[in-house]
Length: 223
Image (cartoon, rainbow, N blue to C red; front, side):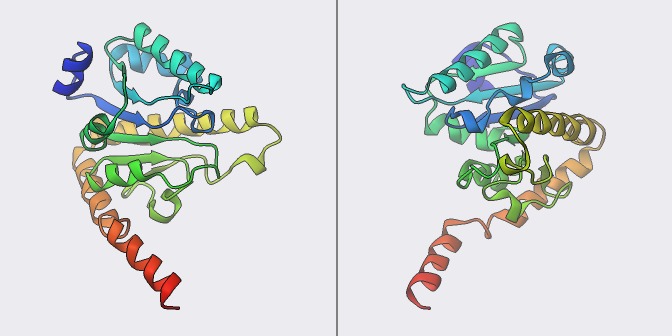
């Protein structure tokens, strides 16, 4: 919170839910998916019940990605006390967010996520992932125990158009966020704390670099 205030002048509320979203602003990652239905999500941002920190950069030639960043900046101006965009995304910002948020949001178009290492780092710090079942998360997710999934594993091959997929995933995100995440955070702190412990317990070894290197060695060089 102090880091964000120093960078932006925005004083967030430590008692309110804080969502982190930090990654390259590629179109398939859909950084602005949560704003799809502003009539629905707007009141939560207006009241501060949901706070979101964004960080990320688009490739200079990726005009769609730069448009996504522009949309997020507009929302930050519209909801200045609950939506923050941190400029000049770097390792320091990444480290702060993967250990300082309550929720780590990830909503790529499945199956286009390569891995999702930032989500692993967040999970090992007790930050609960709320993510599409893509990249590493299908292997890790125990819904309602160490985080949440939304979208039920559907992806680009299950819909005729990307617009249909995006609409489906936005609706699924709202359902889980508003009906499961928020009630747990605000009404059942003991469960939230237990989920944080489970997040650390189920990811710190299984998704470590040590496991990765050992598997590379065992599978590629000894078999």
